[in-house]
Amino acid sequence: PEIIKAIEYIREHLSLQLTAEDIADRLYMSKNTLAKQFRREVGLPIGKYIDKLIFFRAEKLLTKTSMSLKEISDSLGFCDQFYFSRRFTQIFEESPFAYRKRTKSETT
Image 1 (cartoon, rainbow, N blue to C red):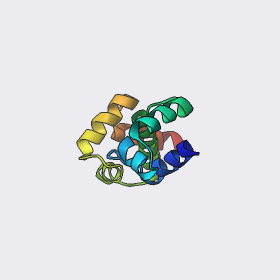
Image 2: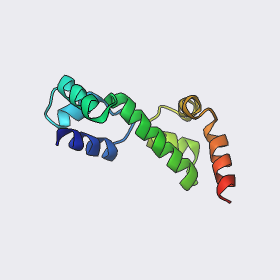
Image 3: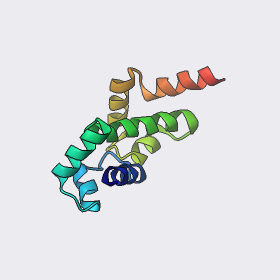
Image 4: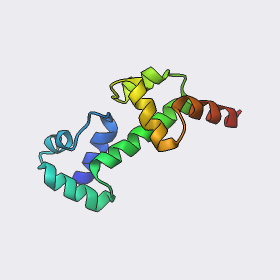
């Protein structure tokens, strides 16, 4: 039940600034206990799980909205849109702009 609560909290407060310590405090657990249980039950460290969710949400925002890159990066807690673009490009091997353009043209 603690890990389900942790996942719900992550989804409700998804941001790059969200830390395992924040989540543990919210659930009245130690950070280490939470980290061990989370990794055992989910199969990923909390930080990697948050990253995956952030970039999954970024994908959705790029393809389903007309939000600017700045608006998307701000909503996901990045310090600026250039850092967001750099991280996005590392993961998807294309810029957010190119990704949006490609996915928009594939659906039309």
